[in-house]
Image (tube, rainbow, N blue to C red; front, top):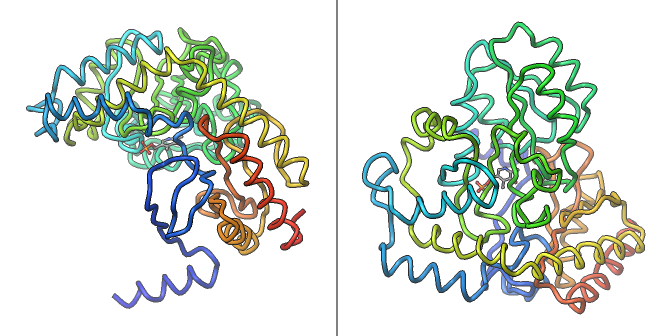
Length: 388
Ligand SMILES: *Cc1c(COP(=O)(O)O)cnc(C)c1O
């Protein structure tokens, strides 16, 4: 297997080699990474719920009552009352008729897309959609057509040219995972109606964060009755693992029969379901946590822009600091790490070539003191490397 060494060397040469970094503590505002205490500015644990006492307690109780594993897929022996309870609460939260769980967001997107589109159909996808959407589209064998990021004019052009396809499925991230900007859903709904296309939204980063009740990007736009297929994850603001799809009872029954990642994979373990249930209830009850997240997000973005970093001005807890050059990006990430701030560099193929960046995410549980200390490090590192 000589190609392994060859390919690895090539990745090194291009500054694209990736390595895992070990956390020696939990997903908290200050944690220990590779033995060094760091302010954590990269977690999708937006509300800090992985550390919430009620979430941990409910997960433990679920293990006591139901055991450590599900023992099979949902269609064989793995369908617990606990799974159904979570599905019902998610459907209510999302103001949807039904919901079905999947093992992860990645698995959900593979399963949903491959079930809804096949040969002869068109999948019409935003250029910056998550990798799991891209992979699901490939797996489906449908014709994949990509429109420029958030460009509804281009989307319409493609829709107009897809009239001969049997079915059309438009897919978008609700909140784009590497940029933090929002899909223009109201315009997309109108286009989907005009061209008789299905519309699917991936709300991985919106759930718990956007919308008046924290129900996500669809609530943010008030489009609850307009989005046919909504998926989201339990792994980000909800602090657990797993994913769900919401929609009509027919959609849910259809996916249970056709989505291969639902059928041929073991159901979520009780601890994960218990944690997600508790997190979902906290999101709805303790609205103050979300307000803190937004206060932190606005503060950190404004201060980073003040320092002179190249950052877009829209509001989101995901803050991309655009650098462009891959090597410079990684040098900044390293300088931040040395200063005690963990905010990773993101390079191709995760983001398009020439748009390498530091992806900063903020959490509700950061204190202003955490953020101010991090800003000192951003100032020093940015100046050292002539970025600001
Ligand atoms: C994280 C993410 C996923 C994958 O979810 P996992 O639960 O981590 O597998 C899918 N879509 C988007 C937009 C994401 O950000």
